[in-house]
Image (cartoon, rainbow, N blue to C red; front, side, top):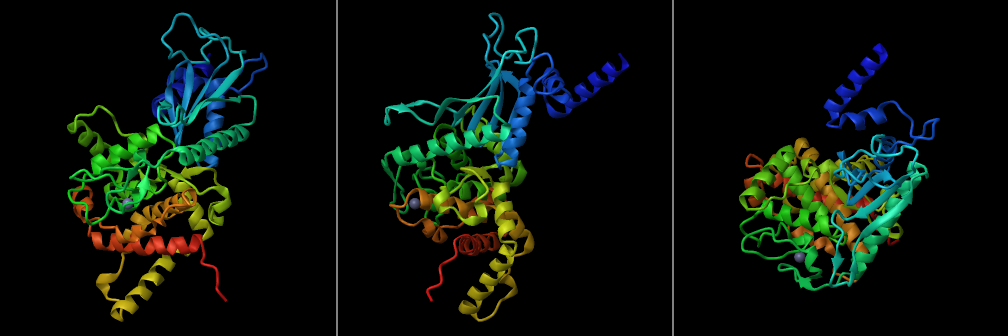
Amino acid sequence: MTRDHFRKKAVRAHAAGTGRTFLDAATSLSLPVSGDDGTVLAARLRDDLVTALDAAGWPVVIEHHPQFHALLVYAGPASIHVRRDAKPPSIGTGDEHPDDPAFFDLTAPLMVTVWAPLIVEYSDALDRVVGVDAHEIAATLPPEVIVAEIDRVVGQARRREVAGTPLDATCGICGDDWAGIGLAQPARPRVAVCPCCAFDGDLLGAEPGKLAFDLDQASSQNLAVPAGWAGVEAVLRCLAGPGLPAWLEEDWRRAGTVYRPRESWGGADRMWVWLPPVARRPAALAGLGCGASLARVVAAVDQAHPDGRERFHAHLAQELEIEVGETGEEDQVPAEVVERFWPAVVAYTVGLLTQQAERPGQRSPWHVLESLELSEWAEILAPNLDVYPAETLLHGGIITVRELLVPIPSRN
Ligand SMILES: [Zn+2]
């Protein structure tokens, strides 16, 4: 009894500390997925999947309250449900826990079902449902195998949507053809632009809240969003820092919408980055799936090329020697600026490499280097920031990391 008391106390503390329900915490704290009596626990399988997803580089958010009689995990663009292959209770609200014996036979097998993106809908233009629509995976497979299957179906759907979405719009700055869903309107007056032109100097009246809203909505509804938006999203996050979700919530509320920013706006690390198809993927990213969290992508680039930041400084010194003959103190990029914006450098470079590989018929995306003017954006999101070193880092950093990831073959 005493032992039970302490266990309950531990469960309550864990539940309070993590935001989980008591039952959800209790079922996964101490019990195996399968018991001797034939019970199988959804919470343990969910936790094992979270561990495997994290190991594979996916950014994960756990929904701690059951919905649709299932435990939910949001992993990058995918939603994953763990539920019981059993008739749901005739009375109930849908938020009954699949491990609650009052509602479910705990020996009934589990099911894993995947959707992507967040909102899967029928497309009139394509005359079919887009994305991954309730793809079921055998719950008896090892968690790593389930995660590999999630990666396979999400990557396959991404390739299908990128190839199949018609290019029915044009970037208002560079004139390249894009699908309308792939463009955003980041400034006043409203001009729809591509990822390479979001920070172009010809766009006046920056509206970071509108840009973030467009990107949030697009990636929630479509798997074919241009990969280069990762760089733009990362810049917004690196400028605003951890206060960005609260700032966006207020901005969106004032604009009259009830949507709330997704949790991943809380930091550059947790955002999703689409990676180049395997055949055109840089060696540094070979261990990852169809996409990964920016934290994992930065770590992979750092591991393969630990001298990346030094190479950037060398590149900058070389450029300055050519232009002005000497390196003046005012032209240096301080270490804290490098650390703060390095994730954005990597996100831009990898996102645009993906974009280039996915759309081989389109113009090269590297004209982005002519469109990295952040002063209006910094005035709103980071008023105390000296923007010139950050712009210098983005420009030189993208060139440097691109050369590290995709070396130009020797012509000799
Ligand atoms: Zn453009």
